[in-house]
Structures are given as C-alpha cells and as structure tokens.
Length: 256
Picture (cartoon, one colour):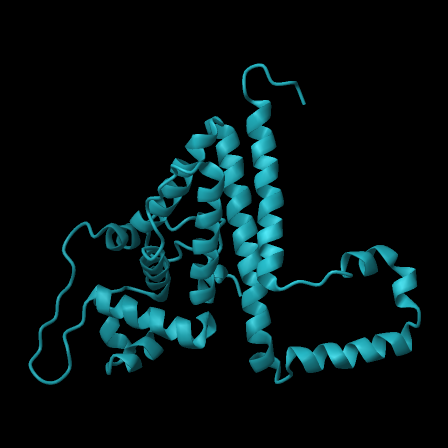
C-alpha cells in the first residue's frame, strides 16, 4: 500500500501543516473533551501505530475519540489532509540538531540509527511515498538536520543532494525489510522458523544440490548475521563511498 502526500485540498492542507489562519475550536459541556486538530492527529497516529495504515479512516479515529467520523471534518477536511498532518507530526520525534564535533561520519551513523528506530516505531510512515513531499515544518526540520551534518563533508549542493537521497533510501529500505519481517508471522500465521524450516526441506527435495548450482549465493550466506549487523555493515560501506567522494573533491587529490 502506497499513500501519496498532498491528496487533500492544497491550500487547506498547507494552512493546517503550518498553522496559518484560525483553527476551528469546539468547547462543549459534559464528559467528552473538546476536539482540536492536534487531538485528532494524535488519535489518528495511535490508530496507524496499532492497526496499520490500512485501518485508518475518519470513522475509526472518531471512534477512538468517542465521536462520529463526521464530527472530525470541521477540523480536518479529509483523510488526505489527515495523513499529511500525521506524517509531519511524527517527524517531530527526530532530532533537529546533532553535535558533529566528532566528524560527519559518526554523526551520520547516529542519524541513521535514530531514523531507523523512528521508522520501526511508526512503520506506517514507510507507506507514505517520498515522490511528493508533505512540505510541513517538521519535514523541513529533519532534512535541515541531515544537510547540516553533510555540510561538514565539503561536498557541494548537487553532490550533497545525491548523498541525502542515498542515505534516506538506504535507511527506509532497511526499515521496510525489518518491519515486514516483524509483521509476517502475525499476517500469515506462520513463524519465521517454521517458514524457513519447511521451505529449506522442500528446496533440497525439489532442487537437490542447489547450493552447488548457485555457489555465490551459498558463499554470501555462509556467514549469517542479525538484521542490525546487516544494517551496520551496509551503512559502513555506504559511508566509505561518501568518504571516497569527499577525498576526490579535495585539492591535490588524484583524479578518480
């Protein structure tokens, strides 16, 4: 499931993201608390965190707040605007400033670890396509923090944009794999151990000598590691590449 940002009314969505203009308010007597955009967004995040993006609806959010779905439309015009607001709100959990005194490389590594953990807390965020940004304040702030770290490399704007895209794609891809691995047992009713045990046995039965037919695959799988080992080693190689690009750009360096 892929969700594209900016599916609601552009002017209304941007105004809500940046809180420009008057926000509707509701104060009613009785046990039910008054609604607000912030209350609705927080409830929607809770739904997505616990039940996934597919379960998100105005009706479901309303139920969580003890209201009808229709009662929310005064504050958030549609589900499209709501997703934009949810996405930008959770991005506020990420740091907006890093101490880069130890150098850009260990700082980028910390950024990557924080961002991976963020995606695993809110896996539904991975379903919001990066093809069209939300353009909210927290999205800008998180991008600003990463670019600020990378300014320490000395790369120019064009190369830095490429590095930013590479890092974001790497972390999102790793997070998606881990998230789907965690979801698979409950979604399929089969544990990872059972799935692999069954198919490994069948693979030997239907394709005897398979490791001999694909020796490179057998070789690369000869030293199994945990997900975090795979992430760390992949990130290390990626940072090596960035470091090599930085070195090539220094005065007096050999052309590559």
